[in-house]
Length: 138
Image (cartoon, rainbow, N blue to C red; front, side, top):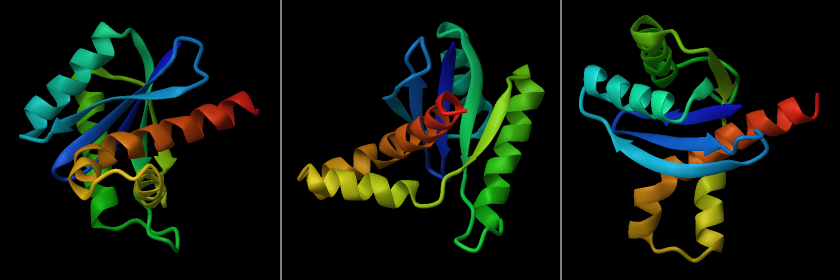
């Protein structure tokens, strides 16, 4: 069972993939956003090539649980994915994943330039690993 994890932002999409047993998440890449058509084609290509069963996408809620402009953009992206190739999509509360990603990279003593390049991929790992941990504990 392969699961794709996505951290969808306005400029990039961080991508993570589960191992075949669905226990761990590994960072794959960061997609530079161009337009919806190309962005969705890039996700579909990874989905098809890796025989993915479902996609976990981070939903950026506000700290009080409400949905803002960014969450609406992510929901729109999900709807476009569904129209294009009908994947099973799980929305995952991603509050504080980017903060956790930055903290982990600071602890690893990565330079600001390196952190900027991989933060979305690290956030995708946190999103997917959170989901994997939940399903393994239930």
